[in-house]
Image 1 (cartoon, rainbow, N blue to C red):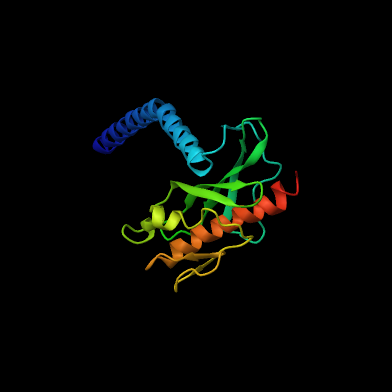
Image 2 (cartoon, rainbow, N blue to C red):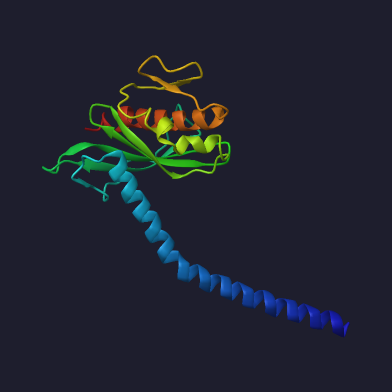
Length: 197
């Protein structure tokens, strides 16, 4: 009985100390992690909308970012891209897709006021190395740049139309997730942002 009580007290003390240490480590690393995430977002904004003079990070969405047709995708934030005169040249949308093979995929996409996609930049992606991670390569990402369609589709036989994207060989799930995420962003742009202007 004494040994059981002694072991229980010792285990409780060790657990308490470990919890306090983990909490302290979290508090120390929380700030630098948030700072790195913010820098990554700023760099992504510049990547997907390089011609913008500045970005209006104070902009607040008027809804919850849900897109009816794309239930597995969500618009997390909208940042207007401003020209030298301070006028809106387009938008940078942060999109999260839940359809990735390795979990959620989050990326930013730039859309000009005329609906043309300026580009995409990944914030987080954990797909299979050598397959789904090919989504982060320019050969895949650059396909979206310059597209001006209300909806994109992927093909396995070579893109021949403006609304088509070449699928990543062996990574159809990742291709589908990114394409649907971009389509959710386009739908949000046309149905919410463009209509609200």
